[in-house]
Image (tube, rainbow, N blue to C red):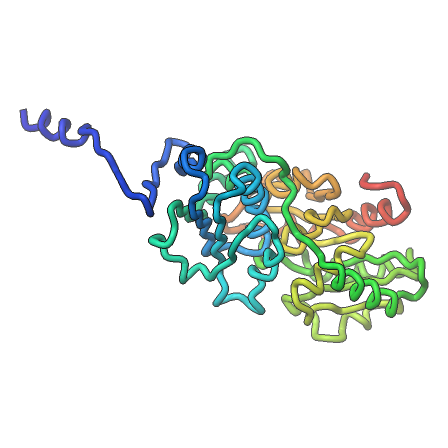
Length: 346
């Protein structure tokens, strides 16, 4: 009898009524409650999509869903809350400050739930799906599904280079090109996660191979992690090297927009290259390429396919990051050369 009473209490129906803070209902798949039914009833609502964690790539990968919200519900007031206090040069705000589908970009720590009709915290929705025993899922899909969207008008992230930024980037590159027809290759040296970053010794070899095979090429290096001291990249070969490591995110993005090939690991700049539809050679190990670049037709993912440990995600590596250290400069250059020579991605 005692157990029956307890069961009745547990199974008793409850009703949550709160106009400013919707109930976070979760299904067995971990999906959040959809905002679509509420907006269909009353479109002119204040929405806050909150992302308190993550990096540049995460900010960009949520933009297809933000675009879809505004496309379907243009009268809704859409606020995007991002970290504006612990980042360098307010980088997340700079990424989306000119996005026409976002009404306001605010600091995450000041985004109070009480100010909005609909409030969704998407800070920690991806990690449960990113495991070796699960099929790889792109975060673009995870964010969209969490908010109730299963069809998007586009799955390409938003990033817009302003006209004045484009002109500036063209002038900078023209000033450093050995010839007006010189190919421009940008090398991003590292992800914000050491496990996803390419070994620097291979990067040095790649610089030398590029200038040996394409003596007139301009190599642009973005080395935020300071693998080499400032000026050292220029001494690796006799070719032209432009180090942009000290520039802000919008300046580097403008230069990416004018380059012929982007080379680097799974990183924020890689997603900018995807949004700008630039040909890219992307190096992968612990993260499956299908989970990051399957919506970027311009990108070629490289892995050491014979390694059984690939796609281990965030677990500690017992093999000294063999997947990234053994990915040779020759393998990477083959793909770079195919793009420069007009053969596309091989």
